[in-house]
Every structure is written in structure tokens, then in C-alpha cells.
Length: 466
Image (cartoon, rainbow, N blue to C red; front, top):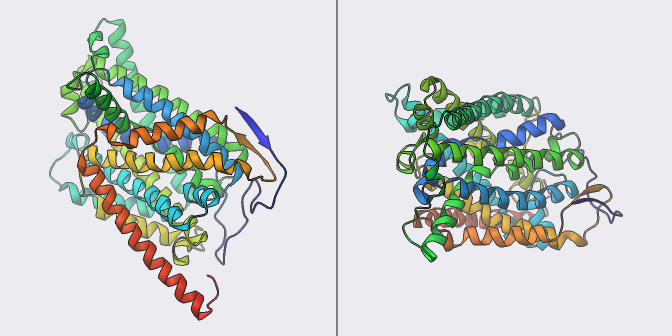
């Protein structure tokens, strides 16, 4: 991989992005390189590994480390494309911005942006479900899960409204806690290996219920679900306007973040399969708690359950934050109404975006279980990743006036192909995932029509752009 510095041809932003957009004050540039690395790691760690390890085991059996290893490779391919694009275009709109610049089809841009937003909301809903599952069950089952989830989302919205620095600092604390929980799992695994515990034979058992085509689709289905654990790095590019030097800091932050989490995930999957049979893992909404209980180490299950609750809280916090920044970016690109880009003057946070996405998250909390919501998140993002990887290739002809990372051409090609395969019916996902994604897309098309109507009325009346 190499860095690219090319002559300017009139790009709208330099390496530090625009100073201001519209009539609102600019977002506060609060993120330096170290904070950004922790942010990316925290963005990826969380619900996926803490809650869906068991679901992956239910699809593939004891070799549940294999889907995570494949997902790791696919994530790296697409991460390289995001790094190149955020370096060239350091704005908050992420995939929507790249799609519009590459293909210049407003309808496609809106669909991509809406799918990204919905993926964040389905991910936050999965986190809310995980929060109210077996981990919380270690303490109480007296409070209705839906009420817990609603209060959970409202609390996260309040943190986001307070400010990006406060939100990211909370993210750093939660990241350290959830990383500590995974360190406990790895320590338990090391103890089991050195003491001769566990069943190593499980690690090579692939139990997909068939051979040949059934085996292929089973592994792909497990990989697509396991890919949910890797999502999050794509959200971090929406913080470009709140990063001090995005063109310099994002490459290192994203590659370190994906590399660290991918390595940890594969190791955690190995330990989980070594100590607990796949059926027990599959039947639990708190699979890593089962690993703690089976590890032969005197570590309090309640303490680990508390750590897991912090982990899924972090996932939801980041997803709500990113969805609100996406609203802000889309509003400034005139994909959503300008009202969605309003910034709270005192705190300089996109308050209308935060309120909007939090309301949608509350509505989605009861739409499916962890597996279905997680797989919906993966499906939506895999479709987006196919478009983003293609956009990298199309935008090679666009020159900007600052240095940025440039990925080898083969990587976005492979990224697009693998994303399409994992998003296809070859991945053997449930019909509910396609139905849920289809309904969300129909909602998006309805919103697109309303927005176009409003824009048309403004144009005919001669009203100035907001």
C-alpha cells in the first residue's frame, strides 16, 4: 500500500475538511490520533462478539473461529477502501458522499445513506436486545425487557446531546472495560490450554448439516452473521469533520482498529469452542458468560456479566452517535431536509439528528431477536460495502490537492466481490432478514419522495437554499 499526493482539480475540502457548512456553526474538532484509535476499536468491539458468538456456533459448529477469520479478511479489504476515501474527502457523510461523487445518481446516494443509517439502528437494537438478555439476567429479570431497552436508548441520546468529546470519552472508558472482558476470556483460554482443559477436537468440527453446497452456504451464512462483529469501522469516517487531521490520522486508526479487534475475535472464538460445546453457546444470549462458567477459573460470573453490559452499551452509544452524524452529513449534502443538520449552538452537537435516530431506534427495539437484527445489520452494510469498493475505483480519476492513502487496485475489487457473495442468498440467511431490509428500503423510498417534493416546491417558489 502507498500514499498518494496528486494535483488539485478543485476539490471542495483540504485534508482538514471544511470550516463550516451552511448557517450552523461547524462541528468541534476534538479527536486526535490516540483518541481516534480508541474510538475505532470501541466502535468495532461490543455486541457482535459478546452476543453473536453463540449464533455463529449454531450455524457452523465447533469451528466457529473460521467465520470470524474470513470476516476479518473481508473487513480489511473494505477498510482499505474507506481509508482511501476518507483521506480524499474528509467530510461527515461517509458512504453517501462517496456514492454521490462516484456515480452522481441522487436516488442511489439516498438509498446507500439510508441503508447505512438503518444498519446503525438495527445494530443499536441488537445491542439493546443483548443488554436485556442473559447478561442482565445474572442480576434481575423483574423489569420488562422493552422498558429497559427504551430507557437504555434515551440515556445514550442524552450522552450524545451533551457533546462529542463527552461521548467519545465515555466510549474510551467503555472500550477499556469491554477489552478487559475479552482479556479475561483469553486468560481463561490460556489457563485451559496450559492445564490440559477443554476439547481441542471441537475446533475442527464444521457442523452445517450437509456437505458440498450445504457446507458452503453454511460457512458463508456463519461468516455473514459473524461479520456483524466487525462492523463499526465504517462509522468512524463520519467523524471526519470532528477529527483534527483526518487525512493523516484515519489510515493508522482504522487499520490498527480492525487488526486488533480481528485478532482478538479469532482468539476469543477459539477459546469459546475449546471450552463450551456449540449447542450450549447457541442456546445462550450471553455466550461468553458460558465460557467464564466453564473455564475452571474463579472469576465471578456477575462481574463478567457487568462487563458485558458495558460492552453492548458502548456498541449502542457509538451507533446512535454515528447515525446522528450521518443525518447531519446528509442534510448538508441536501439529501435530507436542512433541519436534520441543525447544530446545538452551546454544545455544537447535531441535536435534530440525535433526536431523530434515537426515536427510530426505540421503534426498532422490538423488531426481532439478536441474530435477526445482527444479520440485518450485516446484510445492509455488505450491500453498501459493494458500492463503496466500486466507488474507490471510479473515483481514481478525481484528483485532490492533498496527500492521502491509496489502496492497491486489487483490494477494492476483491472487497466488492466478497461483499456481494456474503450479501447474496448463498449466505443462507433467514427470510426475515430480507423482509426487514426490504421494509426499511421501502420506508427510505417514501422519504426520498417526500424530500424531492419539498425540494421541487422550493425551487418553483424561488426560495433560497437552506
